[in-house]
Image (cartoon, rainbow, N blue to C red; front, side, top):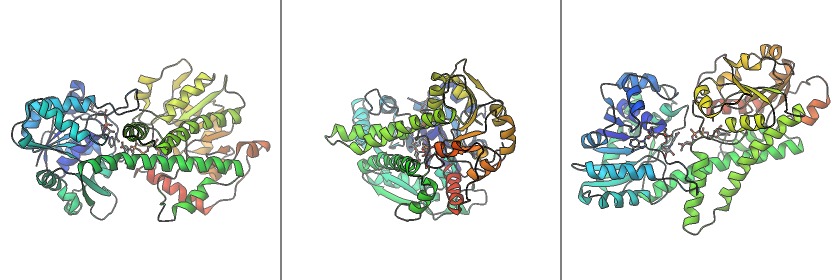
Length: 488
Ligand code: NAD
Ligand code: UGA
């Protein structure tokens, strides 16, 4: 098939490279000329595992980059819209980028096309795209607008795209159904996985095909993200109760997650969810419901727990160090999650700002997100370290704020030698508490190891190893991505 992908960001670039990998001829279009130039020079503007290899494999062959939407759309059977849908000040999704693409497509269409929403949009957007295109002169016989929501996660985007749980097609007619089914055929029939040069991913059944109405597909995407965010806020709330009663949320999560109706994934408590999607999509879904007269109060609570979780972590750091003014904090992690350079709506950046506002000095390190963080955050109280150990030098405490697998493998004895005070505050429950204690440091996670109990004794006390902890750490590693754990 011939495909145009409009918007070469985190989703568009991955989708374009993966469509080329599946055998299609793809033109990826972006209206940011610097991005297109970089891509044409073989440089990848984002940090994403396996993406550089994939782009190198197809660039100049089945994968082209352009800033010319007219040319790209004329070449294509299917046109995927992958532009941003950020939150407007009202909380609704700002659909102006999608509308802009619809207008441009209307005046450049030639022949029959399937226009596909891959951006996350409120229910009813496909109808609005169609209306806009008709208003701008497109012939109604020559195009249909379908929905094909994307479920990839940053950090594991390529593997998620090529090895998905399901392919969701919201189709208005047979032409859209046939075109989209043909595009995903190598994943649906499993033939891609039999190729000797197939990229590695989880061993799985071929993806399940789900065909729905366009509106249902649009709604499935918002409901899925909102439900995952709800799951995280739920386990964060459980973690908070655990701290108050002296239970261990890691054991509780394993106990809950082994019930197949609940499942073990997305039950890792922490400093709240972040990123460019969960916060905006929960907000947008609540706005959709409000707009049609339904008060989705549960989502208000999901957001409020998420905000509160960050404040609770700041309070925990304060409790461990008494006051923050003049304290030096080693911060590991700035990205909103491990495996990515994306700092949009990152809880880690939010926390760093709060620590600085309370008078702390922060020395931060992130394996991939430093330059994006630097562009957003600069302060005399903030320095950026060369590596994780550099960040720890002379610090009053070590704080883990992003679940990078390499932080889980940090040399704790070396860390102990570098820190001024033996205090580790793990906002992602990434480290093994027993190992931290063995290295001679106090450990404070989320939903376990209360500070008051631990710091009442002068020396770090050993904890009993728990088999449940090991299981949880494997789950964390899996959610942090199918990335290799390596020493920092
Ligand atoms: P992004 O900001 O990384 O990428 C959007 C790209 O579109 C930018 O490069 C921008 O320059 C380009 N663009 C904007 N207007 C354009 C136009 N008129 N013509 C050509 N290019 C244009 O955003 P993203 O993270 O890739 O997200 C895109 C959409 O996908 C959003 O709706 C998001 O909710 C959804 N989504 C994102 C993820 C994710 O993990 N990031 C996963 C699933 C779905
Ligand atoms: C999320 C969804 O997982 C994807 O399915 C979806 O396609 C995407 O949003 C989107 O629509 O953009 P992503 O935001 O890349 O993907 O990352 P996640 O792995 O979902 O993590 C989101 C946030 O939740 C991160 O801040 C992460 O640290 C946090 N999280 C995740 C937890 O606090 N606990 C968990 O158990 C899992």
